[in-house]
Image (tube, rainbow, N blue to C red; front, side):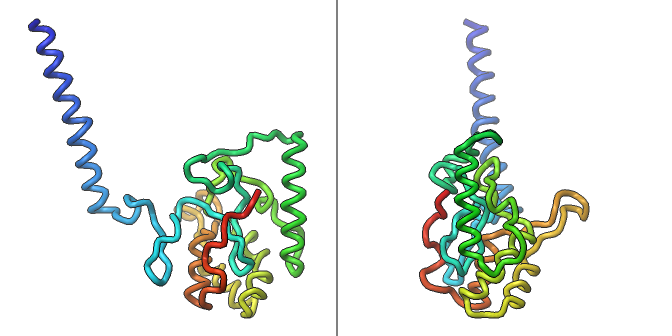
Length: 203
């Protein structure tokens, strides 16, 4: 019985410390030091409405917006079903999907220079990557500029302004957060119709 009581006390102390006090302390510290990140890095439009997270990719069907990489997460860009298609390089389904995406990109971007960047037809491992390369963004500039009725130079300027360099100057590659870039376009040129969300882009 004595051993049982000691074990019970140790269990209760451990539960209180690690299951209650520590999580509450870390939550309070995070809210104090990094409130935006602690709450999901949420992005807001000009009216203050939450339109997504800067950490989770989403589809944009409106030609006036930049498009992210395709997604195999759930039915596409599903934050509750992160994952890839698991198709191998010899998969016929993968080849068909890439060919269909490539045909769509070429049709939607007739003024784009050069071939479509490979990342615009290949999904990420999570299916939720929010960034694309500056090159993939620049490739889409003519379509976005035409849809918004502004010069390509102004849209390209927004891409450059949204580009994040390498971490610490040498880690990784430069990236463009698609959601943040599209929100910047709305701030600079106004929101086109239909609104920011016209449904996920189908795989």
